Figure 1 (cartoon, rainbow, N blue to C red):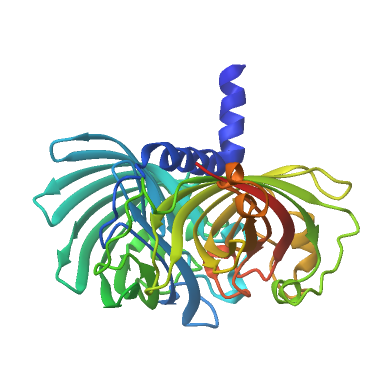
Figure 2: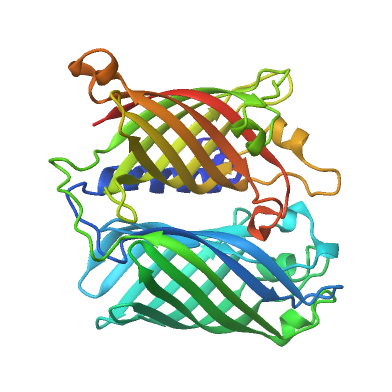
Length: 441
């Protein structure tokens, strides 16, 4: 009985369970006293253009893709993948890994169940010296559709450039091939595909980087036997920018004047306004009074951004969406970068902004209400934004409250105006106005 319950829970909450575990690992395993290096952290946005191997009216698809980067001894984010590395010995590493898979469907074949998915599993890595590595990965989506990857990658760095070439062979199970290429309508045998490409990063100035990539994939004969597939070759390119560590700046020591880790507890009410309407104070009340409660942990990364005194954090959060007459309760998990600028006033007032990703076990009522008629249904994965303003309670009342901040924030989920395929190309979104108490640890 116990094992059946666990199996049902993991099948329903597979991404939620694993992401929550990795968020907890980031909070407990990262050391605040470790100063970052140029490749340790970063967040950005790239525009990805890919050819479409499926039959349809379109030859290419474009999409905005948020990317997150972070490295420490336990937790890592690498663009559209992330995980934890609990075991290391000599040249070997064993990691728990999650990676987004892009499906690149034309509009006339898109359905909610064919949205880009997160594949999760294990990765065994062998390092060939300082700049080469070989990975063996066993990954599956939330329905157990498995792939096995054998991947070689390199890393070539200079003062400004970082280049990462790669070669990969992927072996696909029958279930995976039939669903993703047979579109759940045609049974296919197991198959394989070969990929090669190059990822690049160039340091422009201070905290600003340019990102780019190019890749090509060959699909085998079994895969192209699908009545929905017309091309054996698929290509992709991307270009964008990211904000990361400034290699020419040394952060203040964490234990002295630098930013400290924090815990933030918030409660908020949903509304039917869009993000721009909220910023202009045009708030449309939700008649069903949908609410959420959230808890965030912030891990400090830097105390300067483009020469300004901006505190930067990697933050992980969990939100509980309360049951109402129009929705069941649900869980949301968030991973983002948070930036704070302190306005030089007699009372310290901070303006904050966060960008990241959000996963919810079931899209909320507000997301269904806000969706446009010609758009797809809301999806579990969406982009996450947060705007906040808070005041230091020590300045307002007494020095004993110096580590306490009281603030207002907007908790926002959206699919980047329907322009992001990994978020289902949905135009759905939700906003919650929250009050929070934040405590510096």
